[in-house]
Length: 178
Image (cartoon, rainbow, N blue to C red; front, side):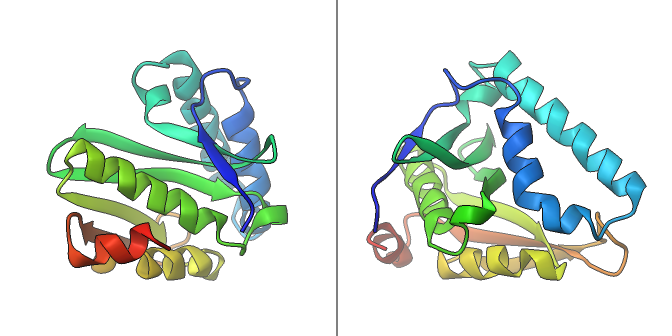
C-alpha cells in the first residue's frame, strides 16, 4: 500500500476542512432536504473556522491525510473526556481515494494516539443511512461494537449509531498491525 502521512492541520489553508467534507459528502447532500443541507454546510463552516481559529485546542485534535503530498482526507477527535473516552469526530477520504483502506488507516492512527494518550475507550457515531455503510463496516473492522442507537439526525427514517471500542484490549495488536 502507498505511503501516507498524517500531518497537523497547522500550515493548511482555512476552508480546507469545509472543502474536504463538501467533496466527500456531495453524493449524500443531493439526497437531503435543502434545510438539512444548509444546516450541514453551516456546521462544516463553523467546524473549519474552529480548526483554524483555535489551533491549540480544536486544531490540535486532528490531522490531514497526505498521499504523495496531496491531501486526500482528514480525521478529528474530541479529547475533552480524557481519560474515559476519546470521541472520534469528523473524518473523511475524498471520493477519488475512497474504498482503498485510507479511512481505516486514519481510524487506526487515531486509536494509536488514543492508546498513547491513555484513553480507556474510543467512541464514534455515524448515521444508519446507506451512504454511511462503508463507514459502519470500517468501524466494525477496527474492533468497534455497536452500543446504542439514537433518533435520526439527517432523515427521520435513519437512526444514529454509536460504536465503542475498549483500548488496551487484545484487538489492539491486531488492528495496529493492519
